[in-house]
Image 1 (tube, rainbow, N blue to C red):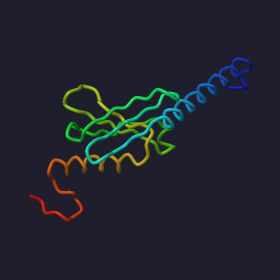
Image 2 (image 1 turned 60 degrees about the vertical axis):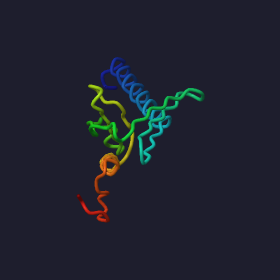
Image 3 (image 1 turned 135 degrees about the horizontal axis):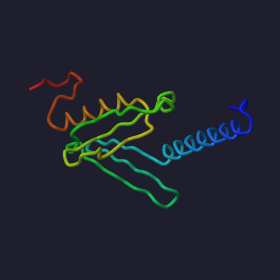
Image 4 (image 1 turned 90 degrees about the vertical axis):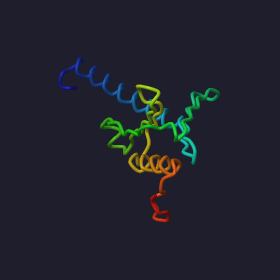
Length: 130
């Protein structure tokens, strides 16, 4: 781009600024978000500045499906992904954990807890299936 002269240099600076802006946005979202998995519910806490925070909860019995959506190349390189939880009540996803590692393992854990709470086997070989 720089070989194109002033126009190429301006395009290079624009692309650089866009990349830096997206990196800062991703960092601030990851830094200001906390995901909690308890034995009864999923909790998503997002912090906006020092005083404002938003808390969303979803009980395991409400979960209809757990989806691992496709992620961008940048997130894939960083080893980050997303998990979406849907209920029967809504057409779009109801809760999303973003910017997390080991998404497959966390998805399996969510589904295992849901299965156990519904009266199923824990999967550890300690219980017999009905």
